[in-house]
Length: 168
Image (cartoon, rainbow, N blue to C red; front, side, top):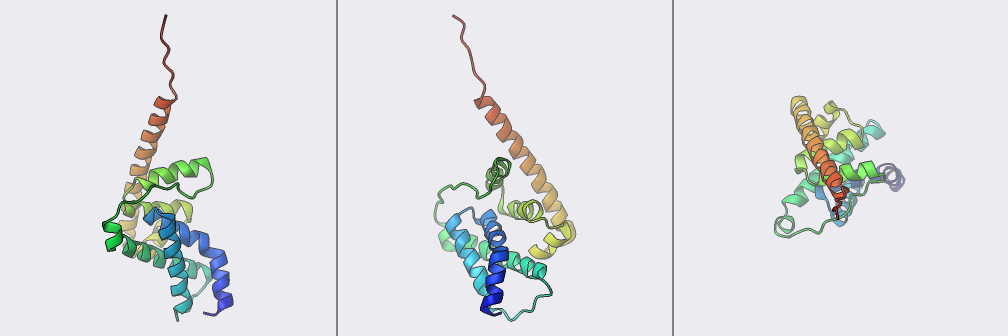
């Protein structure tokens, strides 16, 4: 891959790759590192892509694998992370992003790919290297868990907004 092609891919998919990495790592600096490493791998690969969509799927897969490897590293398993805000634009996406941060890694990835990147369950299965039934089961469980977390968050914020008046 030459520099012009790489530049085009970075412009097209930088945000997508970053969000995929962030959805697993929950750390902006680490997601930046994973994103950069993903594009370095793209530059060094000899692989020929059928289309830009094929390249996008490959980039997401590489970013997810790199992120998983980072999570298994000594530094991640023996340090405590600082919390950060989720890099999504609107309030609704931010609420979902906060709920996603509380979910296990395996559920964050499928939710991100399905809702934020628009992949089908079949495409998610291919990207994550799992069976279609495994991907649909994980997506179903992730949705239930996310729904529960969002309901708890909504209930919690409703309780905080309730005023109590004393007589007298």
